Image (cartoon, rainbow, N blue to C red; front, top):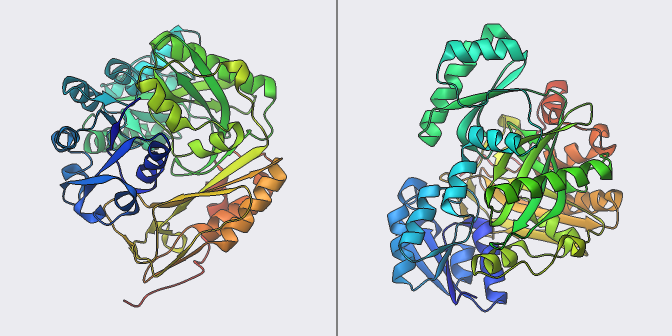
Length: 462
């Protein structure tokens, strides 16, 4: 096992990784920007090293600074968390060249699967079902339009280098295709430095279901069941749960087996997630692979009792998986809600500020992953995720009741600070969600049916 790990990330995920490291007796070094020099992760770590100013491009995306920090502090491995450089092939290659273990898949695997269009082709070749779409990226607008016309509308245009719900555009009819195609390519180029796109048929009433996998370097692979991530706003997940309500166990087992088959075919190593669309006819289709730890990994941990970060680290250290598929037992139901500093009354605009009060829920079978605390300055430089609240119950009804109680207990106050907590309670109370009949269109439907909810607290003074 490693003696020291550099955590190349921030916020709640940096703290969460550090906690498992401490349990394993591994010295933790947190790389941080100037904005995060007094963060919870920095306070918790054994050592911290500043890597640059607040903007992510100068700190958390600064590969030379991160590698230099790891070498200067004697780290043996680098844990990238999620986001930032967690799926960056070049970062993985540079770490390896510097004698550092990158806690994630091999660089060449990240390169092949990180290209969403290529991953789609690879999975189709090994027998996973995919939606009708382009077998490769489309650089010609005329060629893309002709393919979209043949597939039938609506279609979704996706950035090949995209991820995290960004780099997508929906064309609902041929008259708007060229505009959406051009806008998506421009956004992909500006966001990812790669303007290549591909297209798929878009399912209006679909479920977004993903499968958690773990693989070692000796050809062993398991899946840990599914997570339903259908509650989304602008393709960003808000609520995740397991088991996926309303889906037959035979279907989710088939999806799990397909994910393992796809992972083994690509030489995958570490923790990863296969994302699928389940259409209105109950058929599933491969979408993409996330070559990293997911934001929503705690719901899987709650029902399996398996620490995914511990397994990531062990596999990266060269150990075989410590269990087989038959050893994976899921118990009860778990749900996660993402608490974001955003204002639902202003179209969910970011609402950063200083936290004057920050109280998280507690009680039985409740987990809160957060870096927030009273006095913490939520800045404008990074993602708006402030906390993840996870609740477990012996069944879905009790897990949801516990989650509603948790959200009611949550207290986040500060000048100009708003959160989406009240809106999340509305989602949980919606009849379609309660009945497990919701799709990825639920939030849009709620916002169309009525104005965004008023934020419970307004702080307009300085």
